[in-house]
Structure formats: structure tokens, C-alpha cells
Length: 403
Image 1 (tube, rainbow, N blue to C red):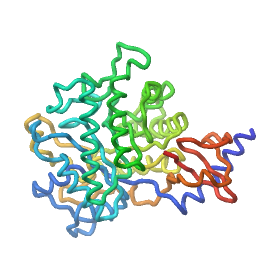
Image 2 (image 1 turned 135 degrees about the vertical axis):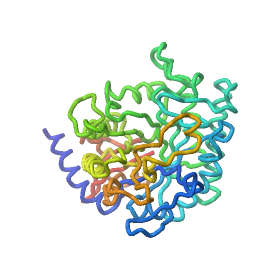
Image 3 (image 1 turned 60 degrees about the vertical axis):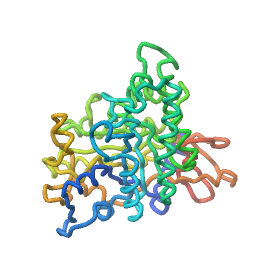
Image 4 (image 1 turned 45 degrees about the horizontal axis):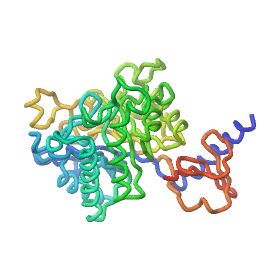
């Protein structure tokens, strides 16, 4: 009972301090924007005034931009979009608007996700050690190029939706093995990326990202539990959450619902003592009214969680009709979860991103000051190490992440 009381008091005090000092990340992945602009697409604000897409994201209420990086999409056949040069162009535009930046390394020439983790063509004959070197070199090359432009990303993903590992077959999670051996190759590649990020950007949050937020916390956070036991390193957990059309507000355990996603954010943050971020979300562009309801609900369930660091919408600038030219080669349809109209204006789906909300303070210099430290369950600690904590000092209580 005493522990519960401490927790309640801490979290009550915490809310007041957060509103004064920290910001919950409200972001968007708009990696297609330069390709769309080259295709003649223009963007307009709600008043019909033509506006640069990065300025428009800021006007909508976004505080951050996420950009994916492919190794050599031209060699793959896609074209020179989302390669290093294209990413730098977009990152500079985001930086000019004062937007924070997340870099999302796919370690592939095209999309990487739970069903596809293709090794870059230039690396296809590499063994595991050569792949580790390639991952490190590619990561440092891109991040150093950004740093040379005066841009230091706040977050860096090492891999995208790596539920099954990365760069198959060398870096897959081998389900025929058990224990640390199951994750060994994948962890070695992921850690090569982690170490490379820290070499260039020591203060960046390194994110390990998986899909399906609704069940990510099952079995004591199965993925992150085994990943960490195998020696995997991360500063933040990243989740994709695409709410189901009908079950988005369901209580069913197997539903892709906002409630289940919020539960995963809270549970994973508690289990692994790191911030958790929804790095991808979206809803059908064909019903903006319903989409606005779903996104508002998602924010209401997560924005005040001590464990949650923010939400990013995936490719909101699309309208359900535009698609990359390469999609015709694949026989793919247009992406259907954007949040813009066909005449280039944002829909009400993005209204949820307008609110100033609260989040996690990144404080690394106060550990030597007299203070009391607690974990997220309210248990007092002799001293914090790495992770997410609650610090009480004098009349101030706040969340602190120590990377």
C-alpha cells in the first residue's frame, strides 16, 4: 500500500512538472515528399495557401520528422529516392523548420518489414563479419554527412520492423534454435548499428523497432526479452501501430486496437525501463472523420503515460491515389492510409497532432545532486544507472531518462 501511495504521489506531481518542461514528440514520416514533388505534387494548408511540406507539418502541429534510409535504391530499380543524398536534402529542410529528426535505417535497398528483410544487393555475398562492417560503415557515413551539415538526429532506428531480424538469411532470427543462439546473428548486426550511431551521435536515442504494437508486450515482451538476453542494445523501443478498421477501440486481446497498443507501451516501458514510442501509425484516408476519432483516441490513451515518448504518423502527405512509379512494376496499389486530400490539403485526421502534450526529459547531469530516485513502480533506488526513472528533488518530481 505504501508503494502504491508513493507511485500515485509521484505521478501526480510529475504531471505538473512535465507540462512546464518537456515535450511529447508529435511527428510524421514524410519520406516520399521529394519523390511526390518531382512528380508535380503541391501541398496547401487548410486556407488553400501553397506551403512547403515541412513548414506545413510544423503548421499542423508536428514537432519532428522521420526519414527512412535505403542503401542503394537505384541499383534495386526504384530510383534515387531515400538514398543518402535524398535524405540529406529532406533533413536540411526539416532542420530549417526547427523540427527534430529521426533517421530510420532499413539496411536494405527497399522497404524492410516483418515479411521482407532483403540484404542490399551490394552486400549480398558478404558473410556475417563483412555485414557487420557494412552496417557500421553505412550508418556512420549517413550520420556523419548529416552532422557535417549541422544536423544531429535525436533518434536513430537500427532496422525497420525487425520482428524476424534483418538482412536475411545472415541476420534472421533463427526459430530452429533456442536461447541466445536464436538471436545471435541479428543481435550482432543490430549492435554494429548501435555502436556506429553512438560513435557519431553519443546523445542520440537508438531505437529497435518492431511491428504489431497490439501484441508486442505478450510473454513479458517476448521480442525485447530474448533480444536483450542475447546481448542486444537499445535506448528506446519503437512500435508500429495500424489500428484495425472495426476493432480499433476493442478490448479483445488479439485486436489491433488502441487500448492494446497503449498497454504495450506501458508494459514494455515498465519491463525494460526505457521510453517507448509509436514510430508508425495511420488510418484509412477514405474516412477522415473516423480517422480523426481513432487518432484522437490513440493520443488520449498514450500522451500522459510516463513510458510514452511520442507518436509518428506514416506518410500523411499521401491521398490514397498517388503512388511511386515503381509500384506499377510491382503491381502494387497506392498507399491508403495517408491524411491529405487529392488537392494536397491536410485532413482532420491530423488534428490530434495539434495538441501540446508532455513527455520524457533527457537529463544526464543531475545524478550527483542530492535526490531520491524511484523506478516506475515507485520503488526507491539507491542510485539510477541507465533507463527511465522518477527523480524527486526538493519540491520537484520528474521523469528522467539516462542513456
